[in-house]
Length: 248
Ligand code: NAD
Image (cartoon, rainbow, N blue to C red; front, side):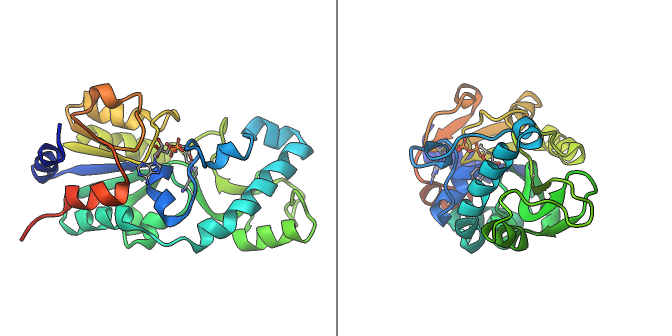
C-alpha cells in the first residue's frame, strides 16, 4: 500500500491510538535498542533478576543508565512526536501508548493524561523496599561521586530507576488501560518499534483482532507487518507528519 492510501486510512479514522517505541526518539538523539548503533551494540542486558541478586549487575546497570542519561535529559521532541500532538489537536487521538522512558511525548505537548507509559519513565530512582524516591539527576550525581550502585538513604534498600527492566512486572493498571484503548480504537498507528518486546507488542495485535486498522511506520521489518493494513518504511520524521496532516 502506498503512502497515499495509508493517508486516506488515517483521514477516515476518528478514534486513533498511537503506539510508539524507541525509534521515534532516535532523531532526537536518543539511541534505540536494536538498530546497528543502538544501546545493545555497546551494552549487555542486565535483567531484573540480576539487578536484585548481584551487586556487580547493579553496578553495570547504573553505569549504563548514567552514561545514557545526558542524551535523554537534553533531547528535544522531533517531528514524529509533534505529529501525535497534531492528531491530538484534531481531537482524534484517544491515547498514546508508549514503550519509551524519555518523556518526549509529554514534552512535545501531549497532555500527561493522554500518554500511557508501559515501561515507566526516567524521572526518578525508587527504592525497591520502601518506595522512597529521589530525583534521577540526584541519583546520577551520587553514582558519579562513587556510590556505584546507590542505596536508599532512609532504609538501605536498592535504588532503581523508575523504569521497567526485562523480567520486571509491568504496571498492571497502565496495561489494562492500554488494552482497553486498543480494543476500542478504529486505527492503531504503531511507530518506531521493532514490535518484539512482550507484552507491549500484544497491543497492536489486540487492536487488529478487535477490528481496527493497523498501520506500521518503521525503518525495519517487524513480526506484525503481515497483519498490517499498511507498512511504511523510512525515517519517521519524513513519513509521519504527512500521514496525519489534514489539508485546509
Ligand atoms: P527497538 O530498539 O527494539 O526498535 C526500534 C525500531 O525503531 C527499530 O525496528 C528501528 O528500525 C526503528 N527505527 C529507529 N529509528 C528510526 C527512525 N528514525 N525512523 C524509522 N524507524 C526507526 O525499540 P522498542 O521496540 O521500543 O523496544 C525496546 C525497548 O526499548 C522498549 O521497551 C523501551 O522501553 C526501550 N527503550 C526506550 C528508549 C527511549 O525511551 N527513547 C530508548 C531505548 C530503549
